[in-house]
Length: 266
Image (cartoon, rainbow, N blue to C red):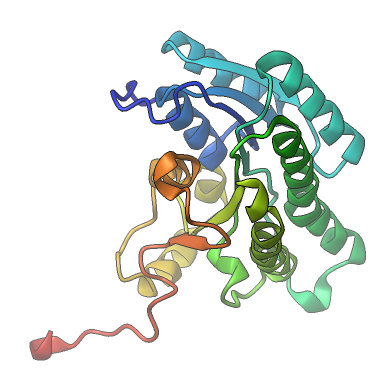
């Protein structure tokens, strides 16, 4: 966990972070706690979420963990009821829960397609809807942050269901921003490119990493903490007039077309 920052940008705020047991969700939970937020980590991996929460508490933060499958509407409703009992009104929601999938469209079973959409898109909708209702009831100037992906912006081989879910998430951000703005609630997304999480380290072989780096102006994968920094900006007061946007943390991937050595011209 990062050392506690002196800024305390999220002091007195309460944040619910799905997918908080590992990777980007863990990095966001740790950064938010370091900035003074009380955090609740929700994950199907309760043991992992509890370990992260314990680490935050060991570093002087306030954190709890709960089990939740975000694709289950009843579990999501119970999660938000538990949050209210523990921390009161929700100020910040970060939807980081997602599952990866690499499968060609021609070989994809309907059940595999549906499971990715259920978790990566519908789960984010269910959590955002619950958060928005709670924020409005409390009169909170809330923040809803979705974890999208460059996969939702550009076609990447084998990522059919995942890309469609993330593309849908980008539009959900715009729709919810339009509908919730009058309540003082902002809705935005962070779209990472390749990030060096434990899951990615297992999924990406050297060929995959080389293919990514060939299209990255900044020739490396992101660190989870760099994605967390973008989420922190969207959760704080500095972003109060920003809504309906997706911030890419992608090393320039979306900006780049063909990259090649310019030789003596470079």
